[in-house]
Structure formats: C-alpha cells, structure tokens
Length: 112
Image (tube, rainbow, N blue to C red; front, side, top):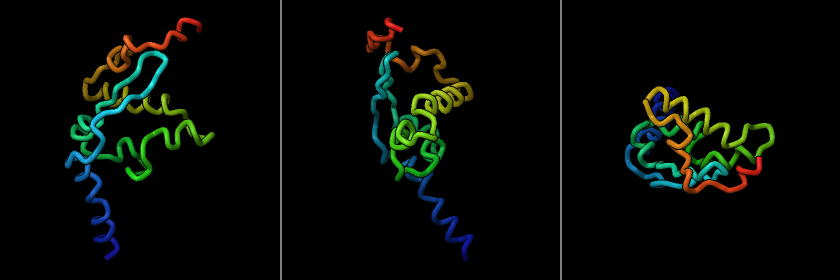
C-alpha cells in the first residue's frame, strides 16, 4: 500500500512538466549580460521538474534558497554547474554568449 501511495505522489511531477503549466521565460540578471531563461522550452524538453527543482516545484526558483541560505552555493554557481553540464550532454550552447546577452552587459565588468 505504501509503495502505491509513493508512486501516485511521484506521477504528477513529470506530468506537470509536459502540461506547460510553468512560467514561459524569465531573466537572470548578470553583470556579464542578462540571461533570458526560456523556462517553458526547457520544461518541455527535460520533462522532469526535479532536475532543476531538486527540492520540488513548490520550493520555487533557485534564488529562494541559493544566495539566501549561507551554507548553500550561490545561484550563479548552481546554474553554471547544472546548465552547462546539461548543455554539454544535449548539445546546447556552452559559450558564455550562448546564454548571456552581451548587449545587456553591466558596465561594471570593465572595472574588475
């Protein structure tokens, strides 16, 4: 009985990814050029919300914990690790300008 309940609880996660119920796109501000993340496109392609939302969709975006809770890595570090690893496997862009928009570069990068 417990196994059946567990299976039933796990079924909605991949189905939510396929039903298009997520946000279409959003921006990650970055000094190296804002990254527009096409959430719905990735949601449909990956099909499993837990790949990115490892604590569940109800936890929200990465920045709800990463960059807020001191013992956790920063959002940008997590995104670089997850995104680039997946892009290598699925042949997505791996150059900086593949995700970062150089037209939206923060001028402060020239002061580093």
